[in-house]
Length: 338
Image (spheres, rainbow, N blue to C red):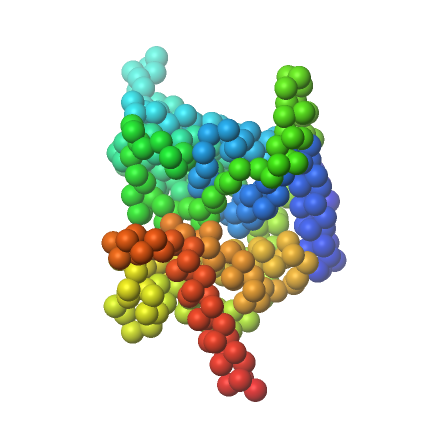
């Protein structure tokens, strides 16, 4: 077990940043490029939350998550979501034992890291089996609640281009994911290196860097990071600007959005900014840290209307416009403080 007896939080934060660098190094032995994607996944894990990865086939989404699981001494289960998957295939089921009594047999959801592979290939009835697990970190079966292990992360993948035989994730399900991470094709030089390192059938095995105790310790450490009032106000103001036909709505929200982000977006903006700040060498988040995580957090929480579709305006365009408007808010706040 790692020594977690630090003289103060500053020393603990420095140790955390060093561990993070080691983690990135080990993952880099297997995954070439995709540095920002890996950083976002690790941010979600240290923030004690969940991530949805969206990308076309062949971008190593599953390999990326599997590699991260190998660098951390946590239990790991992969669930392949298919049209015939049932909720009991995820949560578990009750069976009659030898003494004719019902016994609960735990499903694959009972692991520290759960890969929900191609989550949109299963019907909403089965998708909803994850709702309680992702929010309350528990599973209820016939009036009995079973706690999931800590730490607990759901990392789901989704193919954005193949629509036949898929089921869109309900808004309530999407809202459980802290980040919606979009994967793109690798850079040319990275793809050359990928081909060179994979065609011979030899895969490098990464070393374990973090223990379960360290993950939980650093999660709790991040929760103690101080946050200034202007950062809270910036995050909440950004979320409220997305809500059309409300007093604080931005004109673009009224024109181009059918639905805005809820309070969970405000919470995740702060949580994500806090983790981003520490991994960037700061001891407290600022407005730039909120801006750095805003697209991944808001992307799946706001819904465009037909006008935005007709004019070719993307969700990212809308979020960037709102953040640009927010720069005026932050300057005004600083002036009033002075």
